[in-house]
Length: 268
Image (cartoon, rainbow, N blue to C red):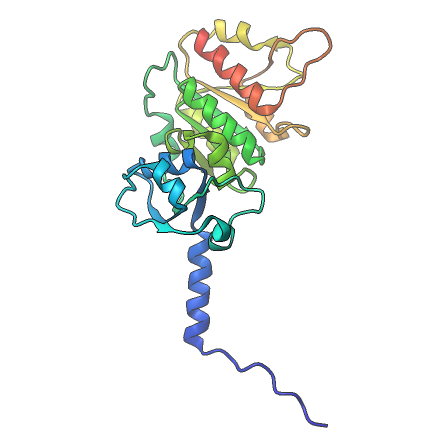
């Protein structure tokens, strides 16, 4: 019985090149949609690699492409040119970039935000939906939070979907993913931040507590919808509060809860 010849073994240099290409791709993000791409192009801190556009999208983006030579493609083959999810609403524009680097937690937490009424941070425990994170980044930017902090392994990374939902805020609002959320919270306490966890079981109302802490540096801590904050996160919080609600209906989407809490913190 003769054995069928197997596939010829690839040379080592070819294997190494393919591995390097995969590793490089894993370290990049494809942003899509006119708004997200335009804001990323305008961000000098963003490392830009490839700009793929249709002619119509390029006309709408304008002439300033941050020195990137646009790759113009036909709308009919755009989805085959750029590795985006099938449901991505790209509007004929996609930009390959490196994730932003915001610095250490101390650099971010102690950096004053323009127009802030009190030093304000937001920490997220296991919030993994990129659409929720994107909406939270928008609210954090609007209400002047210094940063949104989340664990690296249990949070949404920078993705095109997150950037599109953030509507440009990803380029301006620090989103710091840390190796260990508990360690980060301990560091924030040492910097003088008061940790306020939001949970439906909290007895004290958030606005009442904030009124008792005028001007104090605050980190609002929110957990994922459903499981909420982990036990260790709750233990580290100085206070557990809740948002006032009417009747027996007291559940908010985490991005809505974040927006309400940030607003309350800036009003005191």
